[in-house]
Image 1 (cartoon, rainbow, N blue to C red):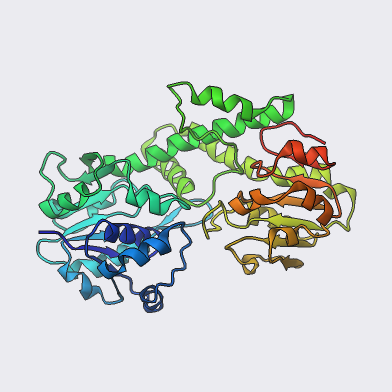
Image 2: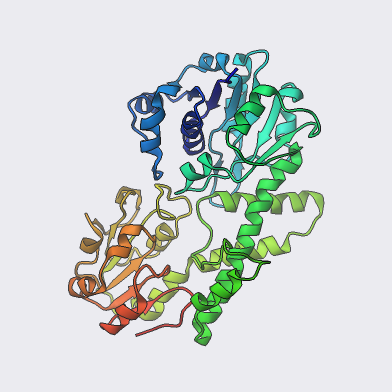
Length: 424
């Protein structure tokens, strides 16, 4: 028998996971108490911006049921708790919404249904849920903003937490998992909950190394972009290593896991000094663009106008959680700015003098300095020669090297990017 799969909580995690489930030919029931959200989903209107999501939904919508009635989950064999976990600016999780959702769902599960916690929770959370441990699981989610559909469709592995890892997984749940044709790693609840945190800590460690040494490159005349290929060819590091320098951690997920490690270390007397240093490194790097602006242009006049491309915290997402661009703009209230982002509206900004452009080139019109804060693909189509004609000034701050630095400098731009010495 093919199991029916349910999802409770239709935020970014739940929506992408549910659509991927329907694409693997499972009947999928999607519950959320937000009536307006469900009405929009039933019309095929999603507030979530993910490449391929709308197309995948269109191909498999006949297997998807969206409902604001929790009773709709009664016929499901496996039910995922899949709401996003809210975090504050310090990365601290608010689990009250998840706990409330679980309490809402539990009375409406069938007597044989399997309950799976998919949202990210701290170690110890799942075991405390008052539900049969034979039918209670924690599954590590590894979705990435901007790549959520790909990650949901083709997981690298499934990490499964349960009370007794040696016990056989219920047939309905196992049938579902095997449909994705990836390794299954069963382990204790706490191990699985910590596995997700461990993965993100390893990623943050690589990011912190890249940021630290990229800044050194800027200071001594080296080029981090030349060094990276040598690192990726080392088998101990690998071709998929996170070695691109950035503007600090953003999005909320990595920050949450670092905060959890620091909290647990404080509670249990273990050392988390290296994690605390990663947090500090992230805060320091987030101000990179602001430091460049102050050293290059902001001290040279009070009538400067700035153009900023990108408000989302990364490309291919609508999310602005801990966005470096918004953090930068918050420090620029003494200067008029004009902004453009392909997805995010300028209405998210609290700025006394902001103009909203209809295109990237329009955002550059008559500005003294252009700052590219999100590496959207469409920004890579900009031609430096067109920017030279559109801009009043000649400064480009391009952390992620969206444009060709050599081309920019050859036509007279002062060009700043991460990991490279200043060129003019």
